[in-house]
Image (cartoon, rainbow, N blue to C red; front, side, top):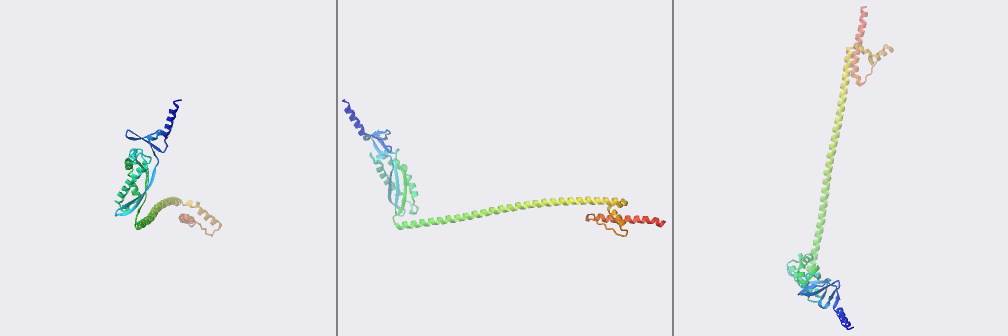
Length: 321
């Protein structure tokens, strides 16, 4: 049992020396004059340094001057964290202790104050804005990592206010006037754009209506041309029929002229004969249609000539007798 005492002492020493690494801790140790990270779950606390891996937040109030010597107050919200790539610079600035990040952040805030003063002195108060200053300061992230071992998680310029309240009130009134002017300009531009859109729409509608009227006129002209062509064809057909009817009448008159005895077979002669039989002293009136007026007149003349020749022919034998 002689070995039980040394074993117990060894267990006590191990329990006293070794600690369990937390997930939010960075365990550092030095080897060959270089700071390195321990990745094991257990680490010897007297041969290692445990620094928090969480972020460190602080708010900074800097007094600076704008161009022309106008004093201003700049409020900055800064969130930092230990940089794994610049851990050597962090130990050099913050020292070998658990609050190395906090100490390095204070050192960096001093440098940041100088950067703020240098930038504001080059710009007039009316040209200084939180956005432009924040962009300028955020560009120094590589400088903070290389020289202080810090990673800038967030850097926000909360406000830039002149110390003189009169100047601050004048700037507020100027900004209010600028906003009102821009608002009114935008409103007027919107009205102009609306008017231009309405005029353009009316112009397009007028063009479309004009094109529609031209199309309607073309269709109407085509319809009138078709109707005129149809009327011309009807007139030509009517003229053709009239010429055919006239040719037929001429042919019929020629036949009757060459053969007067055929007049006795015409309907007019039959009606005259019937009238003469019923009323010896009556006069028969033959009604002719408008289309037969010309033909009736010629037939009546030929029929009268035929009757005169016939009566003269019948009377001549009596005279001879």
